[in-house]
Image: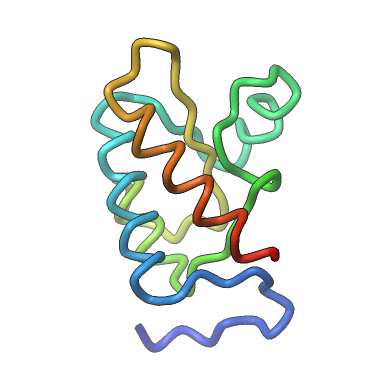
Length: 104
């Protein structure tokens, strides 16, 4: 992507996991089931965040993350949320499991 990844970015998703993450975020954007950085803390505090910080993962490109979120600017963080009836629930759970395995 041309971006330099901070060496402190751990855990860092590999290219395949990054694609999966960005794809899920793009789908979540279509369902309005994601929030950008300013709201990410709120979702954590409310206990509705599916992934950001716990578990969390870095992706190599802020520009790609922004595109996945449906915005033209770079995005440094976003949170994916869901409710019980969400069509993305199983995909979110699989992704959470993959992210947690990076920490082992």
